[in-house]
Length: 233
Image 1 (cartoon, one colour):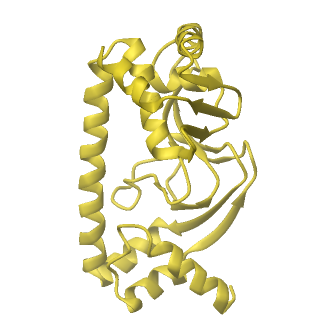
Image 2: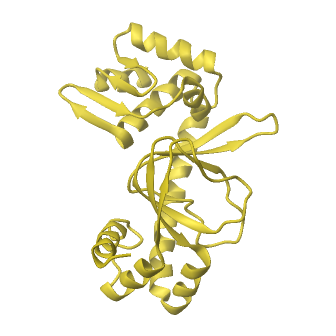
């Protein structure tokens, strides 16, 4: 890896909360064990239940994480984008990967091998402390999301998921919010724990109400405030 690429990797890693407070020396040590990876569209990065070898940081692209039940049905855990780290618990236990990760667009990653990072944390406990703080915040975020989704009917789960996508992936274009996310209707349904038919019916209803448009590669929200008000009805 050239010096220019190393500098770019260091700047990228420092954007993550777990690394942003590291000293230049600590950051350089993390940078030295990071590996660049290019992942093609629809390629699996790791599978649920396989040995955990590395934690990944997304430089470009979108990754979906999903679990598979005994009937082979997908339950999407999350959509991950540029600037996300996954899996979040990877540095702290020897459990297998908790879900399958698949690139849904061409994706550039930095991979940090778990064993090398564990060795680094033993030498630099301050790094471990900073990561534990981030994990605590992530756990609270997931608990809040679970509490919201579990207490809602399907329509409100659809609305909440759309609002979450708008916040995490949306781009403002005039009065519209454009969510560029190549997600099938089945993947949308899997994300909120319902059937594709139910998800299609609710999305079509919101389209007829002129609140949004949906196609294979993006969702366009025409009136974000009206969508929020629908959830509160």
